[in-house]
Structures are given as structure tokens and as C-alpha cells.
Amino acid sequence: MISINHLQKSFRSLRVIKDLTTTLPSGSVTAVIGPNGSGKTTLMKSIVGLVQPDSGSILVDGTTTINNPSSRMHIGYMSQVARYPENLTPTDLIQMVRGVRAGLTTDIADELITDMQLEDHIKKPMRALSGGTRQKVGAVIAFMFRPTTLLLDEPTAGLDPVVTERLKERISALRDGGTTILITSHVLSEIQELADRIIYLHEGLVMFDGAVNELLAQTGHTSLSKSVASIMSRELGGVQ
Image (tube, rainbow, N blue to C red; front, side, top):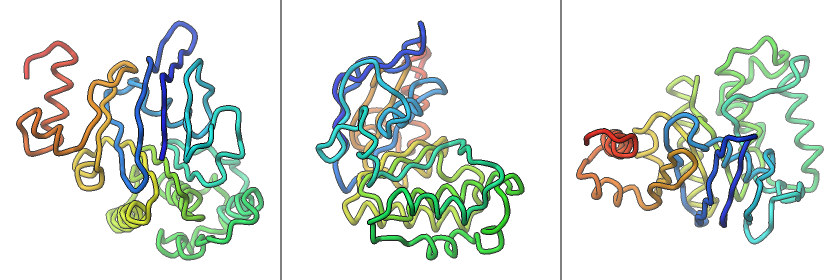
């Protein structure tokens, strides 16, 4: 479970997250959606400890993540734009993660390498890999220890349909096993397929926080894309 209370974050004069409070239950997939610049990635990076909030608290399974690197031991994180040392290979990166998380016994990296169709690329330097292949490496690193908390920022970007389906199957399996999952994606049909809950952010403020079906009922649509377009129009001052 992730508990966030009165979280705030600014970058100089720009307030990116404004007094955000929410709880993400264990065994659920919560999707954070909203326009570009609404605070989605900053929220994820705050949870994983890559961004230092200005105020508020974040607890993952009862443990604070702020100024507490050890809290990341059971968190899997897949960033939208992964930056790796360009001279290292996927094998090198996986070994580094194994070293950092020594003691964890749920290592399924080899299984994931096969699942993500990475066998032919595992010894190549990262600089030689395409964007989609780098995304697959990020998936292996995020999923390899069956995390109890999983943060996925645009996880299927650049992936082919076969690997996309395999990744979605793994997301669903982890959720069913009790993992707390937070996901962002511009593919709203994908969110409708995977997510139990939606948090809609607009300029750092939570404009909706509830079940997917609740959002559909509130906007009177059957598709999530139309529902999101409806609330975006409302928040931007347009007409539904």
C-alpha cells in the first residue's frame, strides 16, 4: 500500500504537485492520467525517492520513502526515459541490480529476458540498442524481483504488440498477487484494460480519484478516452 499525505513539490517558482493526498491499496492497479506537465512523473519520482518533496509524507507498506534509500528494496521502477551508462550491457546492468539487492531470492531475470525477447541483445552495449529494446531492459530490471510495489511510467512505449501483451499479463499477475501498482500511459484503452482506479491530475491538483467505472458513470461514457476528454475539456474551460 502507498499512502501519500499533503504532498507538495515545486521546481523554483513552478508548483508541480499541490497538496496531494491519496492511498493506493495493495493488490490494485492505479493509473495516473492528465495533460503533459500535470505532475504524473514527478509524483512517481517522489514515491521512488528520485525527487525530494518540499513537504508531506509518503509511506510504502508503512515505511517512509523520503530520505530513506533502503525503502526502495522492494520497489520496482520503470521510467519513461531510462538513462543507463551507454558502455554497459543489459547483463552488466542486471548484475549491478543483483548486487544492490543481494539477499532477495525472487530473481526471475532470466525468465524475463526470454519473455521480453532480449536474448540476442543481452551482451550488446546500451548505446547500440533501440529505444524499444532499452524499454525491454527497463522492464526486466523493474520486474526481476517480483516487487511488492511497482511504478511504471509509460511502460509499453516503443514495445511491439507481442511484448506489450506479455508485459500486461505480468502486470495483472502481480496485481493478483497483492502488488501495489501505479502506472501512467497515454494509451487510454490500455489503462481501461489494466487499471482498477484512476487519479486525474491537472496542474498538480487531484481532479478525480476513484474507480474506473465511477469515472465512466460520472461522465456518461463507456470508453475511458471519451471520459478523459470530457474532464479535460471541463478543466480547461471547454464544453463537454
